[in-house]
Amino acid sequence: MTQHKTFPEGFLWGGATAANQVEGGWNEGGKGMSVSDVARFKPKLNVTNYKAHNEVTSKDIEAARTATDLTLYAKRRGSDHYHRYKEDVALFAEMGFNVYRLSIAWSRIFPNGDDLVPNEEGLKFYDDLFDELLKYGIEPLVTMSHYEPPLNLTENYDGWYSREVIGFFTRFVDTICERYKNKVKYWLTFNEVDSMIRHPFTTGGLIEDRFPEGTFEQVIFQAMHHQFVASALATKICHEIIPGSQVGCMLTKLTFYPYTCDPQDVLKAQQDARHTYAYSDTQVFGEYPAYLLSKFKNKGIVIKKEDGDDDIMKNYPVDFVSFSYYSSTCSSANPENLDHTDGNTLRGVANPYIPSSDWGWQIDPTGLRISMVDLYDRYRKPLFIVENGLGAVDMVEADGSINDDYRIAYFKAHLQAMYDAITEDGVDLMGYTSWGCIDLISASTNQMSKRYGFIHVDADDLGNGTYDRKKKKSFHWYKEVISTNGSSLFQE
Ligand code: BG6
Image 1 (spheres, protein in one colour):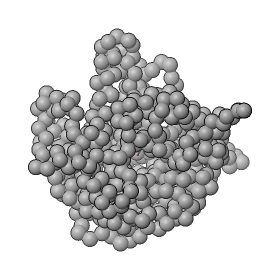
Image 2 (spheres, rainbow, N blue to C red):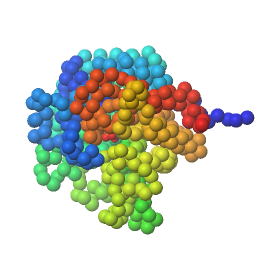
Image 3 (cartoon, rainbow, N blue to C red):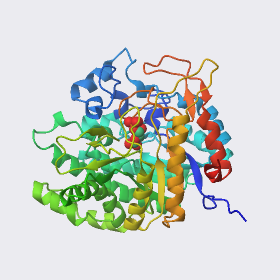
Image 4 (cartoon, helix red, strand yellow):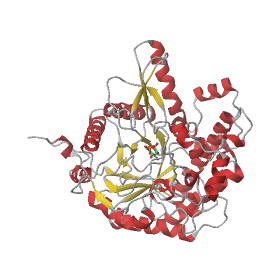
């Protein structure tokens, strides 16, 4: 008898977005500005230069606050999901999603971050969105903070550097857990908590020019400490208000291979890996790992803690570990003369064995399996893949079809690798939400033309277009994968 390969029963299949990249409606329903509303699409820049795209100064904020031409502020438009969420959710349901990862824009609920009273219209928007999802049997998986600190917190508090922001955030968490306690049971605290190091403005609302020269690294780690305490408190609040809820950390899974078997390259790869594990280690084990403490000591970084911080971090660790995975890179002790490649907010040494996407991110499905095994062996907590996908240029054919076979090939290979990690390596995986299930604005480049979706949105980088939705070829393909619980992946 032939046995069909399928994913575990009850496996959660779906897609993921973030409010600041998909919603639009940036100044509607009482919403305040967030850090993402001042990020600009920079048409002349090399799209692989992440830093240049995302660097924001005090002057940029001033310009953004008073701008009358909003063409380049792409995240203010998103994909217009704010107005079209019903149509979008119906399409997700048609694909068979039983989970949808979204984030709540903090500035819709507390427009300035420090408000005492929440904005009812903002709360109502997510109530309606959750109701729409639940109507189709789709579980919401909610990120509390996905690159959306209210802008006022940057301007008047120096973002997450300020200890006060912990209190503002927990007020927000308390409000949303209380309000949605009967609708949401899966939560993530901070998207890619490790990313504060790579893009401190987007993640923490930190602007270098507001701090004395030479102190920014210290500032970043202090802000991160505040997020760790806030994340632990959020976990506590969530568990208390919603019995049975599950709270995860969210890590950028950057996977590094030694470029050669030279022990110096192997050591470099291990050190690079630790740069990202340090932050999930802290959230899972509830304390800073020894190697991060050594780093602080060696660099003269002193974290200001308050009494009780260590206990809070220790007492409220996360229930599960979620992560994004897009690509892998190599590490070398002597990278100078080697080819380089781009990746999720990071440049690394290119791997000659694997191809790259249009944006130079290396495509490595086996790397997903390796990553899953590494994370599961390290943490022994259930995993959740909450981002994975291919940013590509899509062509709409004369007959209106979008034949994104390259995207199907990417997903097929990654989902097969994921299956092997579950069935052969014994990894406990709760579910999978592909990134940008509907086209949205790129976090790094603010482009619409870097598309991840199964659903096409008719808009270009400058916001021209009808914003109409169209199913791509991959829409039908993913629908088949979900309806067969993965077994179609293994049929010719
Ligand atoms: C992740 C972020 O790092 O990568 C998402 O959590 C982001 O917000 C995704 O969109 C893909 O990156 P990009 O820059 O291609 O949008």
